[in-house]
Length: 169
Image 1: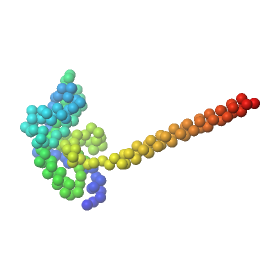
Image 2: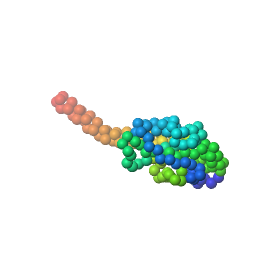
Image 3: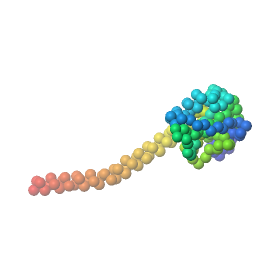
Image 4: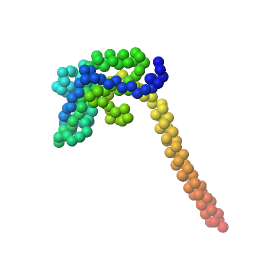
């Protein structure tokens, strides 16, 4: 019930007994829908069907063969991960993501991480703070534009008045 644990970024890291890791070489054409391709061919690469496991695919950096894309496939059984998730939730902790110890994620750079946790179990991020943030940025930009434009507008009006006065003389 400690408040610090509620907001702490918790990672469930699966051991070698809990998950399988495999490097796959796929055609470059599969790059756009790589998760669908791997889900369709999962029983070819592993002893499991897609309905039995949670899996994640991450593109690997480095030199590939021409026309090929190297990816890392990490998977675990649904039974195991669901049980671990329920245990963690029972003590009041919500994990940020689930990864594998043989191929750990970086906590600093979450943009390129993989996550074995299915979408339905992931932490929901509040949209309201993000909308407020974007609204404040937009308001600041509008105020900046008005600070730049107002003096120019006032000068234009002054010049117009002076030209009308000079034309009437």
